[in-house]
Image 1 (cartoon, helix red, strand yellow):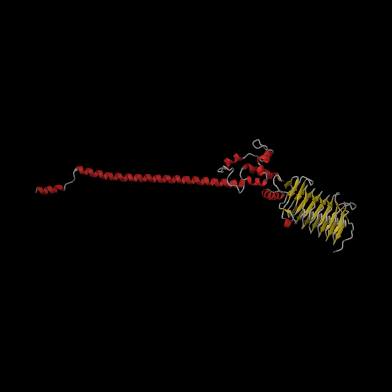
Image 2 (image 1 turned 180 degrees about the vertical axis):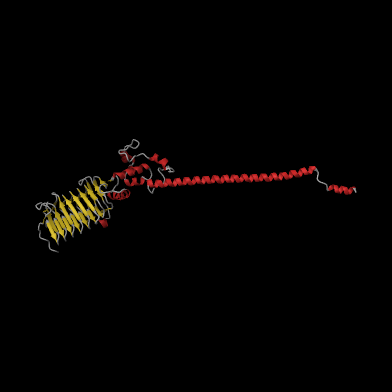
Length: 410
């Protein structure tokens, strides 16, 4: 009986001490889970903060990149397509607004401007001596705003000097093409190529053009220091260019013509020039070109002094002289029209005819018939051939046609 009770007593509830231990164990488990949740929440918050920082940094990088692209775009517009973002060998432009004023030492809008108390001539003669031509300046302008502003000031001068700005006439012509792409020149505001004293060689294409240089721009003037001071050893070819001028030069081309002017859009002025000792014709005008020559001489050339040929070709020669040429002094051919003006006009001592008009070409002499326009030539002073006409035009506009025996058709 007692044993049974004893067994029943074993099934009684645990003692209070055992209950306390169980409760403590359960509470520890709950605390551990709570700590793990808090830790995960902290890690999640840290991850969210890091994402926010990365997004902010990415946005800053995009803004900086856009600013750099904008600066590069503005730099290319200002300094040209070859600009690489550098103003000096040591710096890369990140902010044109910040760095550009630091490189500006010259105000192109102020005449006779001194640069940090250094005279402009000293810049050209000493400081810029290693790259003292406009070709180099056209490249250097991309590296520093001083050179860019100086380049712009050079453009405003409408002047290329040979040999100071460019070593040769042909390089000056190449540079004139660049100038013409950046500025519009006009008849009243032309680009000038100034040739200093001395002999200037034109190489050209000897086999094709006979040492002639192509004039590839309109509104351009080649001006020398005087026909007794500046000599061009070579010739010029003008094809469909407008308002081209040659002033105060001597032109000689032993391999071909001195001036080859052609094309219906071509108009050329020749002022105070000598065209002499050319292997071909001194001045050849054809295919509808127009020329005005004043106080100029065409002499000692291998064929004609002046040749004008083809319909719509026009020449106005004022106080010009044509002498000692191997063939005719003046040849007008096939519907061309030549007008002679000025009392100093003189055509003499040519090996063949003085004036020859052929195939319905016209030579109008705007001088009295008694003026000794053509004289002492090897053959005829005036020769008319197949409908060619030579006539003096009086002050009242009437013609005085001096009858010459017309040449037979040969």
